[in-house]
Image (cartoon, rainbow, N blue to C red; front, side):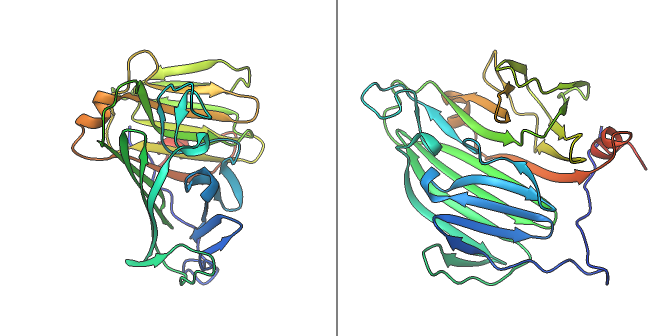
Length: 279
């Protein structure tokens, strides 16, 4: 089952709408390309704070996105996790690349509007070296995550390689499994965990806004047994987690990659639009 690559919006003249240049204010880096706007937050170790598509929130600023490490330590401020919104992550470099040219991210920064941006971070989460890149273009968002061992991993339990706080307006989801079969449901907002399977892709959609997103992996990655990919039905958002063991993450010779593409559709055709079954 192929997923639709949704065309980006164009101006009335048929050319891509011009985006504003990147800005940095109050510890928030804002990057725009085509219909997409992505915010990165310094206080959360320069992770994704939010993603908007045509002005509608896809990824909410209500929690942590991207990666985090489960490493219990009662002496740490957060006794369970290190990195991301939980603190303790040592960011070694954070770079904005605009149309292939790097620009330092610092107060007073100046970078031009570009067709494509890549935001690259290298950091340490305890014993794990983490390299993240986020590409923002009119075609959507591409996240890449890789992990290497830096020191003794004793006590490290697992990694959430990707996390996505889907906006609370998202009401429905469809999961495409590795064999092409589908599972679907409604977000419950009751604190439960659902899905718990390996995926090829995940679709979320809001009946309120008529806006949704398709998250697609480069391959059907094997997750950590029992949870794999799961949805936490929280009150403030509907959060997606992709959980991998330390051994799984360190054994990979290529990054984990996922892509997010926004779409807009009516209640009658949102599934067909998202899954690309309409010709």
